Image 1 (cartoon, rainbow, N blue to C red):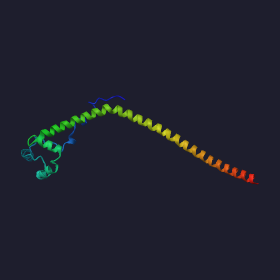
Image 2 (image 1 turned 90 degrees about the vertical axis):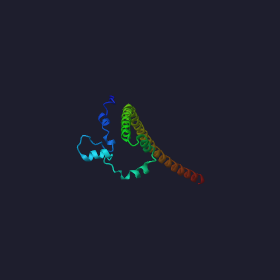
Image 3 (image 1 turned 180 degrees about the vertical axis):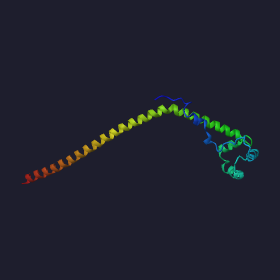
Image 4 (image 1 turned 60 degrees about the horizontal axis):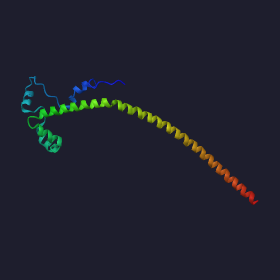
Length: 160
């Protein structure tokens, strides 16, 4: 199996992490007054009415507390960019590890199929033994009945 370069594998997916973002930043070249007003007030389409409630709810979470400490009031965007960069780095590392381990996973899969085939042959062999033992058991029962009958016949003759 030819090895693929980890750089070529999923490059478009590595560069497109928009699915990880809650919302895309708004373009600064728009002439929409509402957008510029939102940027000036820091609204960005968020419903800030429940922020106190959310902070109480998640304030004890170590990740949230760390983000608030590191981000502060003005650095939240920088912290978010750092987190996103970290996510990209970890994703790339995971893909590289996956590609590196893919041959091992393939070997394991082949070995499992081979073991499955061997176990299947053992299963059919044991089923054959079970049938043969069943036949032998029937023969033994038949011989025991004959022996019992002959024993009774011999005893009857001896008494007669």
